[in-house]
Length: 57
Image 1 (cartoon, one colour):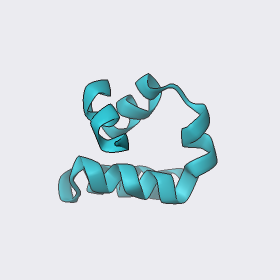
Image 2: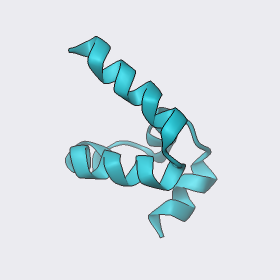
Image 3: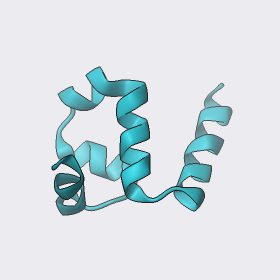
């Protein structure tokens, strides 16, 4: 299961833009994302904290 999740995450970096990855993460893990600091969410998405802030608007 972990391997499948890792593979889909790597695929998302190659095929999706940052906004779509963020929206996808929210759809799957809203409660978790809301409780994590922006620094951790942006690192997971592979984007800067500034871009994450812009995506949240």
